[in-house]
Image (tube, rainbow, N blue to C red; front, side, top):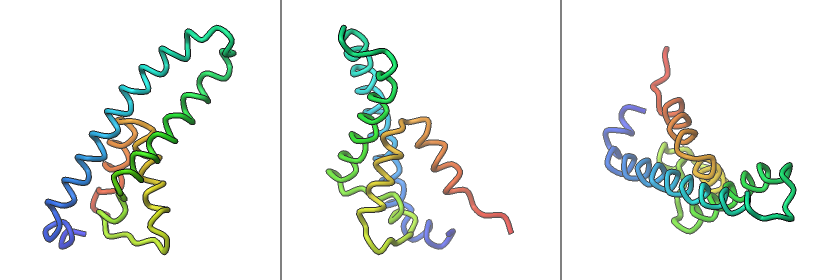
Length: 113
C-alpha cells in the first residue's frame, strides 16, 4: 500500500478530496430536502426518514456515475464490473461527510502485521 501511495499520492488525494466534497455538498442538499419533505402535509411522518435515506443514496450514486468516481480504483482495487465500484462509492457519498470520513479512515489505515 505504501508504494502505491507514493506512486499515486496526488491522484489518491484528489479522489479523496472529491469524494469528501461531494459528500459535504450532498449532505447540505439533503438538509434542504429534509426541510421540504417535513412541510408536505399529506406525507406521513413515518415515511420521511426512509424517503430521505433513499433519496440521499440515489443522489450519491448519480454523482459518482456522473463524475466517473470509483474510490476502489483509487486504492488499486479492481472489480470485474467497474460500475460496482461506482455504486459503492456513490453509497459512501450518499451517506454523508461523516460516513465518508470514517470509511476512508478505516479503509486507508495501514494494516498491522
